[in-house]
Length: 185
Image (cartoon, rainbow, N blue to C red; front, top):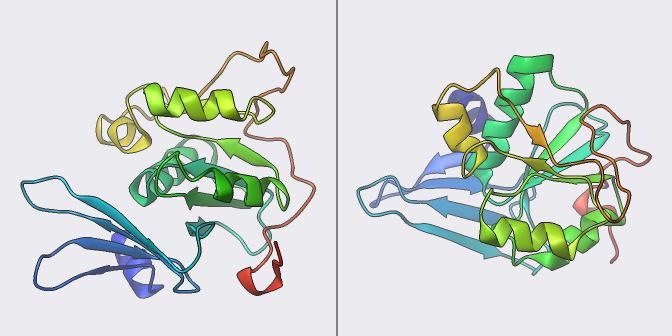
C-alpha cells in the first residue's frame, strides 16, 4: 500500500525530518505525520474545507470520513480484507473539528462517519446525528489494523439512533464525489 500511495503521489517522506506527508491529488491539502519518537500530526490546507482522500474506483458511492489519512488507509485495508472494496472514497479531514469539510461532503455524496472511538469522535457523531457511523473496536482504524482484528472489522453503531439513520457499509450512494474544480460551495 505504501508503494502504491508513493507511486500515485499521495505520500512522500519529507527531509530532513523524515515525516510521512499525505498529499491530496489536487495538492491543496497535506497531512504530516511524525515518524520519530515524538508523535507529531499537522495539516496544511489551501482552504478550510479541503481534505485528503483515496479512491477505490472512478465512481465512489460511499465516503468514509476519518480523522487522519493513516486511519482512512487502514479502514480501506480492513474493508478490502473483509469484503473487498466497493466504489468508495476514504477521506481524512485532519481532525473532527473540521465540520466545514463534513458539511461540504454531505452535499455531494452519502457520508459515513468513521472517526475515532474517543471523546472527540463521539462529539463529532453527536454533531452529525443524521449520518451513519462506523465505530472502530480500538481507538482508531490504524490501531484496529495493527492489532490484526480483521475478523472484528468496522463495528456499526446501533441502528436505533435518535435520527433513525441506519448504518450500512453496502448501501449505494446517490451521488459521486465531485472533483474539486467542479465544486462551487
